[in-house]
Length: 119
Image (cartoon, rainbow, N blue to C red; front, top):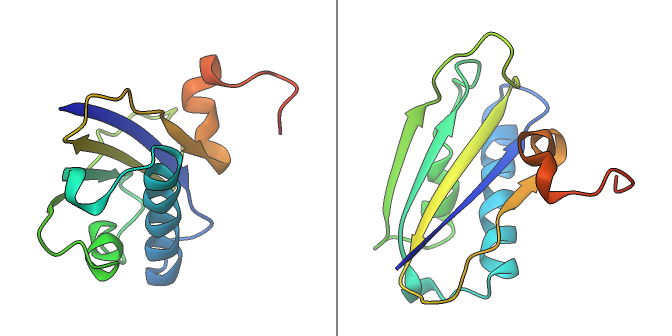
């Protein structure tokens, strides 16, 4: 079993922005890591306290992951943290390393993964 991380920022606290952001993040993670639905054991989402209009895991459930354990939690509040940020932790039944996925403004959370000249 392997675990992989990811995060994305969204533009606003709205149901559509939350679901679209969670869907984009999860889809990109699955694609980048060539995961099959049957390999995904569980997904935990955390959201900053300013995200209140929907559960990010709902997007994954609506994508057909009905047998996958999904959990939403509030991210610990830190005054200098990103706003409107959804983080994700995926556990998969694989021996392959899982590439992290950080999108939009969440890329600053892992500057070590990105070259300065990338946008």
